[in-house]
Length: 258
Image (cartoon, rainbow, N blue to C red; front, top):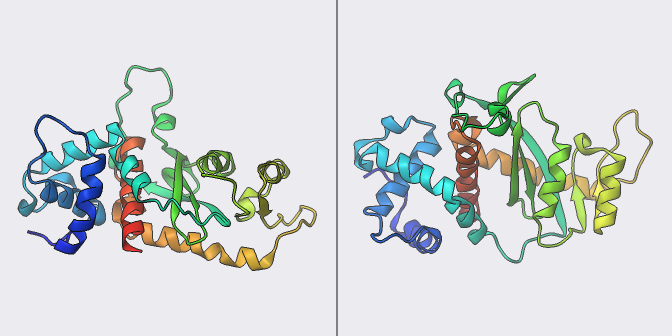
């Protein structure tokens, strides 16, 4: 079989997966093989049908991944591995635009009248057709929460949702100039956090501790690690739920690895 999990690695993953997976009347067969197939596919950005035969029928892995995405299993797995002692002395907010493969288009309308692309977090920006993904990272450069929005969306509106997911207000919130806003800075002060956001060129000077801003490379390093998964660096999933699940799997693996 393709080497995705060593015995030592699977001994870490298996109890976590067993704790969060749906408990049906019959447990899934060859769970290690199926999870290995899911990881291999997302690490390599391959088609489901291109899975090596050692992983078994491709449709078993595809169905389990999609079903668990709808049931929130990958979200629960991510929440499980997040350290309860999160380093919230300093929290970093950052966003990136993920280019979408042409196969990512074409999600079902599901009977509503809303824009399918907006609902599935797809949109066209100067960088092309894609999805804007924003993350909150703790002081150790580990992911805390994610938001998805269409590619043309601004990062600032997502910042409030990311901060609301935290256990408590961080001491410092470090962002780049894209988050420079008087309203946002005021919201951070009201939360009990100190903003570390450099002003735009045309804005008046505001306090921005340089020693704290120098640590912003931690969230950039996080994105570099997550994008080593080719299905994170390029979006192949049609639905926002499935694409978020891919990101959560990569973030969970990053927690366990570090």
